[in-house]
Length: 316
Image (cartoon, rainbow, N blue to C red; front, top):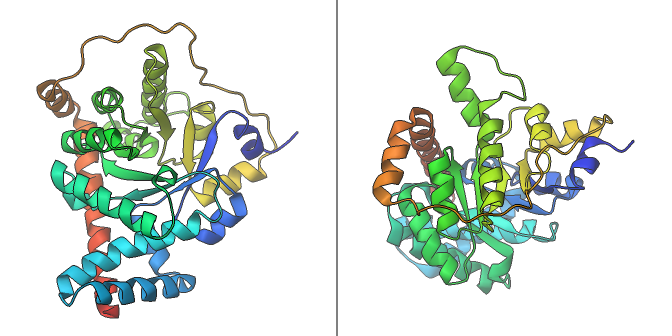
């Protein structure tokens, strides 16, 4: 019997949830994804020092303005790391726009175009990059515009069905529903323990997956933010799963049998009316978990972005 990681790869595309190139070399996922928190961790790895120096020098060449240099160095570092990761994955790298732009559609579009341009300047075509943005209404509308330009997007910090519906209707390439963070909220809110089968994060992703397949949406569902391999096992068969190195190692060491849990329906029917902005905002407001976790996720990414910029500033 092969290990569970090998079995999982039979029906789910594995994405490495890390900016650590050493881990990516070891587990050889199809794709990889980063975010400000992962970039901050990566920037503190000694092997990344040359990347930071390269980003700093590039920023200095582009501007004499210190504030602009910090922004430029951050963008360039993300692209340098992404370019390096793409040497070891056959698919795509997800690179996140600044979380502080989550409620600014135009700024998100502009930043996404800039990131893609930096990748293209580095010899990486846009079909190997996904632009990550938060699943706010503004982020989803920005992604809708970018998708029409041929820039594929990964909508992250997704906690509710309303967010998933809006993303599908916007033609977003991929969504990242956060399984573990949903579980965290419910455990804290209810004081209950959940099995892998009753895990609210697992239930949410399975519902979204079934809805997408039932109505023929092409948007890829990529479960994210896992707390244990039980959650991963319950979502086996999901289009993609982005998994941390620690959980990838657990799966690799487990020789038990893994059964496919999610299977797409062959009975496709048309979806109902599209969700409006008003309906989207109200549905999000009604969902305390999604409202709180979305806001918290954006704040935390912004905190780590500022920490990364402070690190870059010391180098400047």
